[in-house]
Image 1: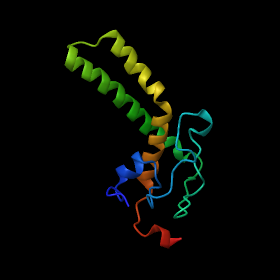
Image 2: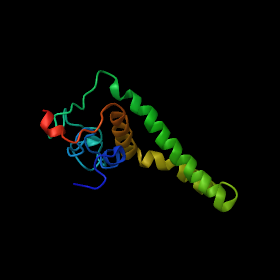
Image 3: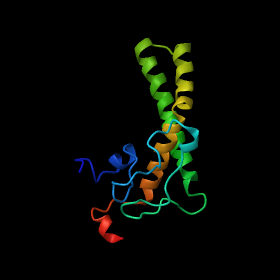
Length: 129
């Protein structure tokens, strides 16, 4: 058992089931292939928590993804502004391209964050089947 188990941040960053923190949220661990980027099992194999919400449930994750990608852009530009005193073109291009390159990871994280808004951790979730 991880020392961070039980915290929402652990479930989000490790892409684990928000209820038991043991089951994987995605079928494949690598988001690098378009085929498996968003493939989630219907439910957690450990606690049977459903990962399928009502129709349109994960649309709210788009707002989380927008916040994550915007935060990344502003962090890169803000850091360059602090270091250089102005925003250089190469850093501006990198800041705009970085969310596109990291899109599969941002997509997975935003879904994990959105699901964690609605499902809460239960220490004995396996017993509650």
